[in-house]
Structures are given as C-alpha cells and as structure tokens.
Amino acid sequence: MTTIIDGKAVASEIRADLTGAIETLADAGARPGLATVLMGDDPASQTYVNMKQRDCEEVGIEPHHVDVPGDAAPEDLYEVIAELNDDPDVHGYLVQSPVPDHVDYRDVIRRIDPMKDVDGFHPENVGRLVAGDARFRPCTPHGVQKLLEAAGVDTEGADVTIVGRSDIVGKPLANLLIQKADDGNATVTVCHSRTDDLAAKTRTADVVVAAVGIPELIDGSMIAEGATVIDVGVNRVDADTEKGYELVGDVDFESAKERAGAITPVPGGVGPMTRAMLLYNTVKAASLQEG
Ligand code: GUN
Image (cartoon, rainbow, N blue to C red; front, side, top):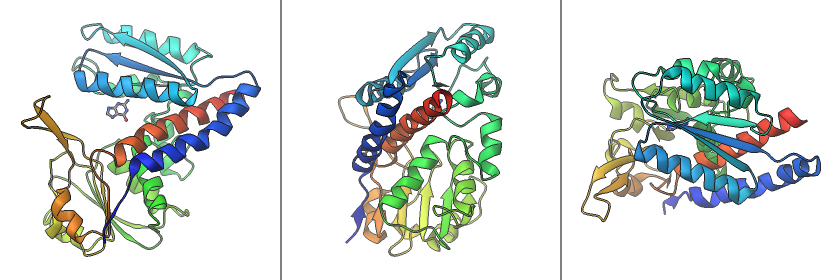
C-alpha cells in the first residue's frame, strides 16, 4: 500500500508546536509580527499573501501588509524595506516574488535585514545555510525535510534525486540534505533542464523531489518501486472547472502512486508545509530579537 503523505496534518502539528514559544513571547510582552510586501497585483501572489496573513492570525502572529504599486520606482520599494527593517513590531517579513521586471529581486533581498529575512533568501542567510549553520532554513526545503521526517523516511545514506535547481527549493534543499545532520547525510543528485536521461537519475533514487515547475513531468515509469516521492510543483493548467484551471504538480500522481512507497498529493502536500515553516521562522525571528 502506498502512503499518501498528509501535508495538512503535519503542518497542523507544526503550528500547534509553535504555541508554546508564542506564549513565552507573550509572557515577555512581545507578539511576533510578520509583514508581507506585494509589489503589483499578480492574482496568484495576492492569493499567497492572503493565505500567509490568515495563517498568522490563526496562530497568534500579528500580520502586517504593505502594497506597492506595480509601476512604482525600485526606490519606493527600498523605502518600504528600510521602514520594515526599523519597525520593532515586525520581526520578519518577505517581499513576495515575482516582482515587476524593472525591479531586480536580488537588489531587493540584499536590503532586507538578515535577522528579519524569514524566507532565508539574503546572501548572509544563504551563506550560513551552505556553511551548515543555518539561521532561517528556507520554508519549502525545510517543509520537505519535516515531511520526510513525519513519513518516517530516514535520509541517512539515502540516494535523493532533486529535479530542479532553483534558489528557493532545489539548491537549498540539496545543501541541507548533504549536511552532516540527523536530517541530512544523504547522497544528493540535482537534475535540471539540461540533464541527460533524467529518468535514469530518478529511477535509482530512494527519494525523488520534484521542484521544476513542469506539469506532471515525473511519471510512474521514472520511479523506483517503493521510493518516496515529494512533489513541490504547483502548476496551473487549463481545465473545465469553475476557475478555468486546476492545480497539478510536477508528478503524474496516478501513475507515480502505483510504484511509490509514499507520495505527497497536490494540493495538500508540500504547500501547507511551506506556509507552516514561514510561521516557524517568524517565531524564531521574534525569539532571536526579543530574547
Ligand atoms: N513566491 C513564490 N514562492 C515564494 C516564497 O517562498 N517567498 C517569496 N517571497 N515569494 C515567493
């Protein structure tokens, strides 16, 4: 029988585990605060930001939000960032990506106070992670690690193939999983759009993580019998639904499920974990700043 890994349930446990730290902060007169910044009006980004705000309210984190017009100058966004860096009520914040084309996201990230960088994207935090001394683990890779742990998958000595080399998922996850740590010690292969014979690399893996943004790229024929499959993909594809689209992962769930030992669904797998780990990082940021 294939285990369907329930990301919603694991995320609920993580949120419940945060309440103790939030109460400790409250006893000291501090309430963790998370700000989201949205430049422009991309509908998917608006949805993501709204969900993050709602998550905060549910666990007792104070949500803040700043909208920046899509045609504003980069300097206007930098000003918002400077204000958030100085705001003692905001312990962590993120600038939702993508930003409009006339803004360089790297220039944005570099201006974020690394102590408030709950995405873990600032070069100082990336460097710390690679050095094995992470301050904020980026939310999706951290969520994937927590899902593997919850599913009872030991990465020690395991062959893990990651499909996708993004700065947000593939690269940090590879770095985390190769580390000498209880949740690391894996042998990691990172594949991408120029990889020859992708199936040969996924078929030998104990764990396949799909984070490439191509709908249903990984099918059952590419999965070893009994492997664990983690699907990070969230792709909108045209469909005869009320919204005119449906969300599908990077894995062809139906065929992969026939061979996998355990697999995450989309939605309800990695997505809720990413959101939970953002709350985790916010509480950590508050504890570091108030402690
Ligand atoms: N856009 C898509 N994913 C993310 C994320 O994890 N953080 C931010 N800031 N923007 C995103």
